[in-house]
Length: 259
Image 1 (tube, rainbow, N blue to C red):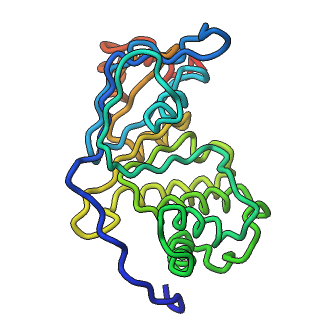
Image 2: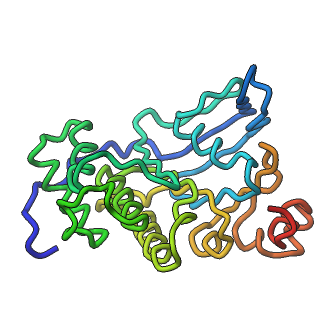
């Protein structure tokens, strides 16, 4: 952090309402005439500070569930409730980068939240320092490597101090070294409260990497064809006897017998 400009403290945020989601009988249908049931009868509660992994085969509904939580996907039936002032950040497997410098990709997101431009640029440097990319502040974001772009996306999200992190396969397209770097940043950003007196953020992420699930999650939800078939603490999910009693389908997935 040495050499970075001094900036005013982050503004106080509303911490009255805990970050959480409450879904009741949610149904999401996609495709022509809504023929594809992407989510069916999903009832789910996520409390503030939980670390929830969504697992399942391709097409099981993980991404749709994340998009529904974030409000990017509309449910055709059921209800979704969450605190009105909950701050959320969603990261995709391939983050979208604007044709701007790394610094301005972050500064623009802050400016859109009402932060004056000069202050937004200073805070963007702080965010870049958190992911060890301050030396790349002036580099065109689209010219960065995949791992650097994902770190930049994490810095952009961190700068907004979200109550909830929603991550869709955040390391799936990265090489092993970049995966370790990004996973370490996710663990840091979602474990430590962003400000004194704040609760640790809520983390909801999808992943095919079961080792990553063990390292990052406290709770695992297994989906199949848009339905939740298992919802267990992480230790129970990876206990073969316990998992088989709850969901033989999830056990087959853990064994690698479904993809």
